[in-house]
Image (cartoon, rainbow, N blue to C red):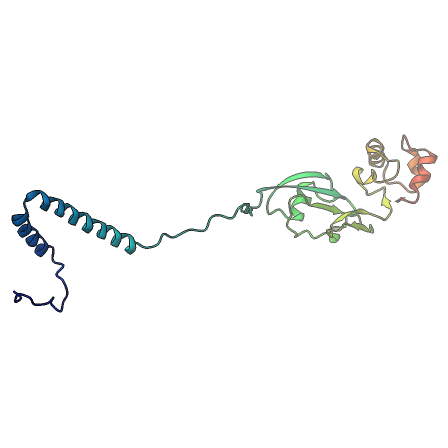
Length: 221
């Protein structure tokens, strides 16, 4: 206990709540109950506000997560289709549009189309190439000069078509030859053997001198 009149201790004013309550009790005995209750309420309010302020200042700052970019492109699926649609043309037994499993090679497609016809130049195509969706494969005849598109694929021929080896779809590439005449040419050579000269094409119903003159620079035997 300090001597009367002594100054504050070196540690500063006491902050012990028990001491504060003891002092408040002494004041209550001297001043009466009601003022003391008012003072006690004020003390509690001050302590509560101080606690809340301490909690507020001690709380970590909220973390703001970056919002998703507006208009960001959706992820693009990279999964390859399980089935492919491809076009096989040229010197095969059954040219046309095919739906094949992914992983098929050109050689598998040629086999599925009944194989090559007589005179097909299989060395002109890569039989080991894996097929892609929407791809076209053209199997030329020996001696044909295939037309190469911008993607590097053979799409047809610029040389004369051999009427003894060409398929009906290939014959349709000749001027003035539609599906019916192409089928008639194939049927005629199947029954009578290969054409010895282009002039024999006049034996095919529907082909006359005028049409034959159109074919001379586009066909051969």
